[in-house]
Length: 427
Image (cartoon, rainbow, N blue to C red; front, side):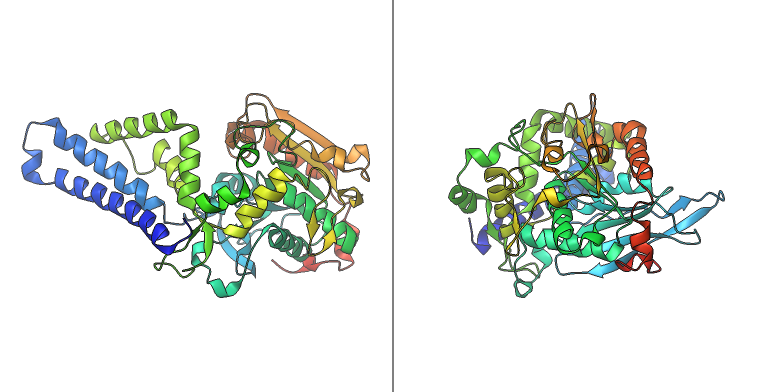
């Protein structure tokens, strides 16, 4: 599998399906065809439209699509997306609300690097913007990063988070969603060791695999069912000639997407069948519920091979975070050294990716943290997506997280004002 032609073949299949969809849509749009009293051509055009759109989205990075936010003055304020730190494998970005006084509540969203872009958290960002200054990690697609930029594994990811936290200062509230939860915890512990005054004010971990074995699911138990050699041979490919990262070893986003789809194949098949029929009946819209969801869900990105393999080997197989044995740049990370960061875990009772117990396993590791600084919440009836972007997030979890931040607000204000970290920068 680790050959350029394999990657190019996969892209060729995707490109061909996109072309077939576009061709079928065009054929069904001919006036002469429309004159025939046969619904087949209408269905063919509908199939083509849905197929072309679906396969085209797989190689397009979605826009944030957040243009304005209503301020306390009742006016719409323009939102500018600005980069605070630019790095080869990811940027720290800020959603700057023009004409609005900076909010005291400052939030860093740590987006997952698990096959989708950071825009997967678009609705999370939009829900927080009216009440917070929002920052987010914007990870890059590995296929677009030249080999000359070097490697990027989970230690590099952790050090990126350390740099981002130091940039934002100790009064920042960090919210890590899914995959980065264990690494955000490790980054905080790393700061507790090397620069205690730079630790964030609060840390909220949402649906992340701190201890994958605490309540294993098909996803988190995957690492125990395969050997690293088998995984490297079957999942890793070299980026093809079409992209700037030609030759880089990656875990392709298209492979990750196929795994996601296979988990709920019947559900996805029904969704696409229903959408084709809706288009044929003229009932579908460019931004209807199906397109709004799948435009994001199908937009996938490649991960560097070393990041993917080290995640499986060290987080899932070795459970280095769960056993407090994680090492970053030769330094042992001791989670027990976190002493003044309020930590909250959030889980969904019906999460089939990171089940209840996996994320809350972080709390017993915080041996140096007072109990009043620890909190946990299990959202009844919520699945994985719902705990950070769905109805459960909007109605219950978001208010709880904001109250948690507010209950510890100001605890690091003195450190921020004293100049620890660039939190005083005008952003």
